[in-house]
Image 1 (cartoon, rainbow, N blue to C red):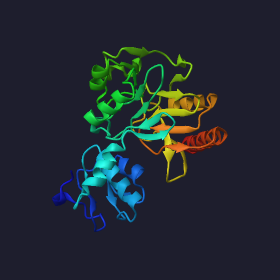
Image 2: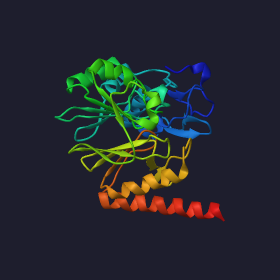
Image 3: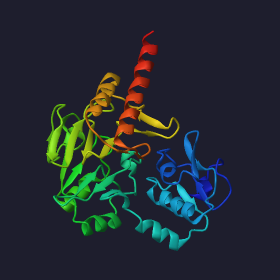
Length: 295
């Protein structure tokens, strides 16, 4: 829980607040956008929750915060319990957002896919009994797909508990040298009829995306929805190679998908043809930027 003595002055008065331990990872702004905003190098409360739904979302943000920077002066234990039980949070069909983001991955989102041939964890949240029990009830974890070296979180603990196979690209394998499944090269890997592993180097040399049922694209830090421009964006910080990043984005034009499910940045659902248009617009913006930089 956050420390009231470290409360940021940028918070509006009221029950919820953010303290100075915030790492500005964006988790709270994704979960409760009507209450939290980016303010300089931190998030802060710009509007206290006004409805039951907004209050619930604020408690979800409090729980998901990877560093415990969000506090409530008068905690509502009933709502807190309900928020805890809301994770893993159903996105659609059998795809879940796990919550309880990990500081080890700078607050990156992680996901769970329930599948009859074995469940997949995409990157890893904090190791929590609540999640361990939930995953167990849904059939455990067969595979842990690691999008890149930065967002591993507590993957080794989940792998050990569920005897799961960790999947990582060789170029990033120093982060998990004992991983059970190493992906090589740039070719797409058909892991099963429902799962495609797509290497997308750029953010890191070994970045990968996972496409599930030609509908859900788990992108790690390669690509996300940007609420400020209301469009897709590529990784903007800690980029291994800009030219590779653009080529990897172009490669994704080969695949149909409707959901962007990133590690950092907003999730978004659009019809497949509209998502393709947004990807083309993104590439056009990057090309224009590259042309300006070259002049």
